[in-house]
Image 1 (cartoon, rainbow, N blue to C red):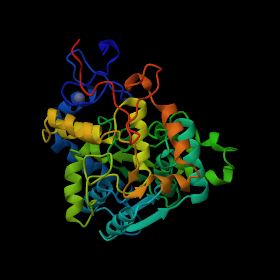
Image 2 (cartoon, helix red, strand yellow; image 1 turned 30 degrees about the horizontal axis):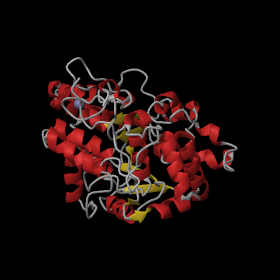
Image 3 (cartoon, rainbow, N blue to C red; image 1 turned 60 degrees about the horizontal axis):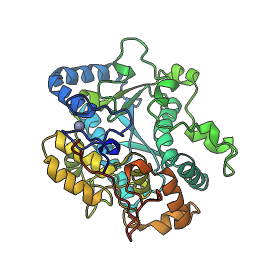
Image 4 (spheres, rainbow, N blue to C red; image 1 turned 180 degrees about the horizontal axis):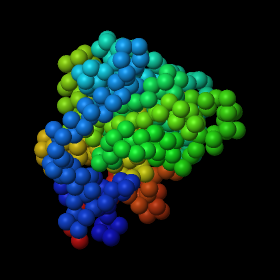
Length: 389
Ligand SMILES: [Zn+2]
């Protein structure tokens, strides 16, 4: 193998350099591992105090909700809701229904309500949604694009409608940022600020008009309130992950203690049974990440657990080889054909789209440059760990 073309991995975790916005330094350690190291320096007692101070500023008394909590019913949002109740807040929990909600996802939403909260769920037109799923899959290689837009826009729309300024989000990929509610100035959440977190992959909501019969009237829920509307309510937000030591596994343990249900086995393409349980299309979303960048959800989970000292790097590598990037025949027990049929797509067309979005430099190809696939349709990476120069 030509070492020049091989994929480089972090020496501490197993994340490849192809992850967007990841940097591997001169010592071979990635920026995510460095950021995690930085957590040791954080004064978590001070952060907790800071959180309580902000919450006091926004507490509103008996006749109003204190905050909006965007929830999916997953382990993290169950945990967010528990923490808000522990802080003595009166939250309004808001769900944007996922693209293809699973039965276990529905049961976990029902469980979340039973924590003792008011709850609103907004479901966008499912006929149009499936057309957007198909369009986004073929255009930007992301079937979950409408879901990722809606989980950001819908809670903000409800905040405006219900006149609730504070939105309490969970984790933020930029760990060092507490959210605008913490800033002394500019505490208003602007549309531009939110769009940075939306993950739109260069496809704007307005680009959908005229595609697959989508009209502007179908896109109301995918659209942020205007800046004037946001300002009138003073909509702002904070990320809990900045104020408390965020750990998905611990959140799952806490959520389980409050009735959260896990999957009966390891989720397909993952390493665990406690996350990504609510949308049967997530397996396709994660598979495309593997095709584009050479890592999937199993790698994400392996790295999080390596950093926390719960998994040895060598064991993680073996587990990832076994689970990451397998062709998604089944998702949360639902067959591929059924999921594709709903978006009016055959398996052959799906495979063609997969091949179109595959970064062939990362995968084993034959002498004609065609991807080599096993009998299950799986492709293999050029290298799964660093290759000696
Ligand atoms: Zn790393």
